[in-house]
Image (cartoon, rainbow, N blue to C red):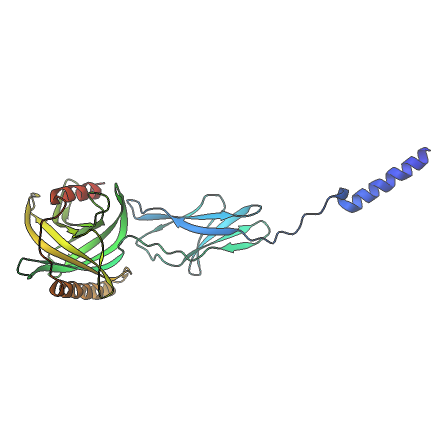
Length: 289
């Protein structure tokens, strides 16, 4: 009886070993991770953090960040991130997520786009529709404000006697389209050349290009409002030029387009809907941070 039972148990153990205990062996992992890219708002040092949201049916082991075919960094710990300067080349980012089986998922191409990005021409004109000043603005960065994300850039006038920082967006209130051109920025004070506002707080169109058409108020060095002028701005490119030569050519073209717009569609000058001092103070608070 004992020998029969021993033989039965031995056979059962052999069968169990051969069949893995009767359980189904794990299937090979052939499912690639999914991954998508998002980004933070630019900080005070123009840094933007790209975050890869990567998921897998088992586990994501690492994420590689690329720009075109160049590997930028590899992150093995969630959240998977990469920090870049928004003033650097900002297009063609991708992320590749890996699992333990070596499956790879690749994100869609991601570009960093800032508000009102690119090259704008601008012109101020008086009550006789005569151009009193003109120039170009290049918006290349952004700043977070109480009413949303604003464009940040640098303007210069045609005579090259004025050149400083500029803000564009909802400066003093929600759902406004305002601009502020600084005259001088120091650690103690900020003076403004002018602040302006679109007539209906919505971008217009001129031959397929975005426009701002409204009014501007200039200031003296003490911050006292001076003259009220008509203001036009036209976006000639949504790309930020990288070389000095490209910037010079883009500014020249933008200035010409702004003058053409001011000549073609001069507007009746009227006071700004928002007190220009309110806009100036809002812009100063933002630039002072």
